[in-house]
Amino acid sequence: MNFLRRVVMLSRSRKLRQYPEARRANCVFGATQASIALLVLLSLVHPSRAFAANPDQDAALTGSRQRIEKLDYRTTGRLTRVEANGKRTNYKFVAKAHWFPDGLRLLCEISGPGSEKTRLLLHMSVTGNVTIEAVLPGEKAASVLPFERWNDPLVGTDFSYEDMVENQFFWKNQQPLPPEKYGARDCLVLKSKSGPQDQTYYDSATSWIDRTILYPVHVVKTLRGTGQQKEFIYYGLRHVGGLWSATQVEAKLQGKLGSSILVIEGGSGKAHLERKDFDLSHVSVQEEKAK
Picture: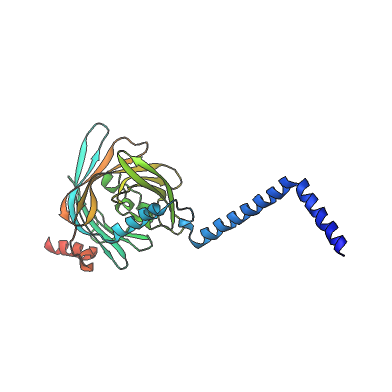
């Protein structure tokens, strides 16, 4: 028995020496299988973070969400459409926003030369779902804006109704991309992809977020189906009341001449707003009584 055992062991050792490449290949294959299994397991546990490059990338998403969850402002300004020949059409813009336990509420009013006011009430839930109510020119009461109109130009500008909120940061699928510079700013880059559960006209939104202040300086959104892109550039970043904000946001639609600019001229970053401040139908009724 001892003799037979030694023969078997000798035979195995000769086979291993004869086929070292096969043994190494098996080891590599086994390690590859284990790596793939680990990545699959990680993606099942948390799809958006399975390929996170470093903690800074997670900070881009967390910082963006926290910034929005602290919103409580009143603001005034103007919304301007700039034609290719330089002609400008200005609209007065007034807005207020507050984050409540069930999400963000944004109420804005836009009025321009020779046009009736457009009033919008947007509600974004904590999961990024958006609903929009509106009182459009010629209407006397608020009604839900059909999804088919969410991508319509807002008073003829390059901003759409949906562009009034940054719901992309609350979509489930968030993919960190390698850091890049945008101009002189060091940025973390985050690609947010919408899913079938997200009611949106955008397939994805890629954000360049300043690494130091965690505020976006550049966002490119891609429309579903067409692949057309819309670019947003943020200017005049400032720190007021403990929060960063932009004084101007420019929107440009790929393949369309000209652009549109939202300019913030004044307001308060700590408005102490309550739910009663966002009753769109109440505002409409009050105006009807005043006439």
